Length: 175
Image (tube, one colour):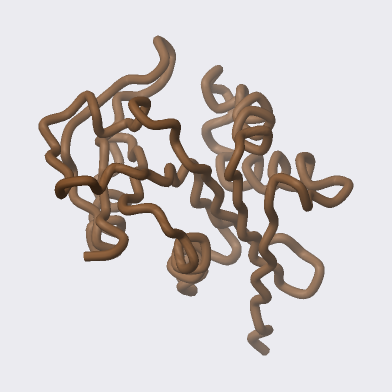
C-alpha cells in the first residue's frame, strides 16, 4: 500500500526541536555510501550555516512521521550570487537570487517524484528573480533532472578546496 507523502514547510524562525538532527539523519541515509568522504561528513556545518541564514526555508517530506527527504535554501546576499563567477547575464534588474542548497531523498523513497515535489514546494512562493544551485559535475543524471526543472548550466565552480567541482545552474523564476 502506497502512503501519502506529506510536505511540511519550515523557516528560520520556526524550526522545531530535533530539526537539525533530522536533516543530518536523512543526509546520512541518503549518502550512506559516501560518508567516508570528509566533505560529506561536514554536512552538520552546512545545516547550521544555512538554517542560520536570513531567508532560510525548508520543505521536509514525511511518510507518516518518517522524514523521507528535504529541500532547503536561502536568499543570497546581493553581489554574492553563485552565478556571478560565470558568463550568465540576468535580465535587466533581475538579480535577486534564491540559493537551493540541498534537495535530497532517502534511497527507500527515491523514484517516486518526491524530489520534484520538494523542489516545487520550496520555490513556489519565492519572490526572487532567479534560483541557483550547484550539482557535482560527475553526476550527469542529476544535472539532467535539474534541466527538466528549468535550470541551465552557466559555469562551474569549486567552492571549497575539498569539495567537488560543481556545475552552476540557474533558473529564471518568473520568465
